[in-house]
Image (cartoon, rainbow, N blue to C red; front, side):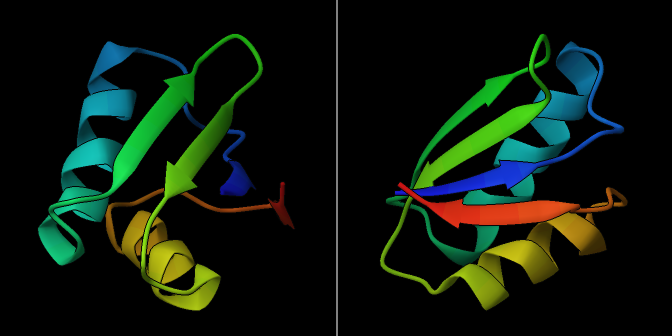
Length: 68
């Protein structure tokens, strides 16, 4: 699982946009967004670079990435 810190993610619209962006490149991905901590956890066959790019292309900056 990869954890992303997305500081601009603050509402349900944000989480839906990020989830949609990730699922567009990996429909089987499991995405969990937490607006309280502003973290996005992703289980995917794709690498963190591809996932980071998807989040950024959706309009959100990614500050830190961790594999957990």
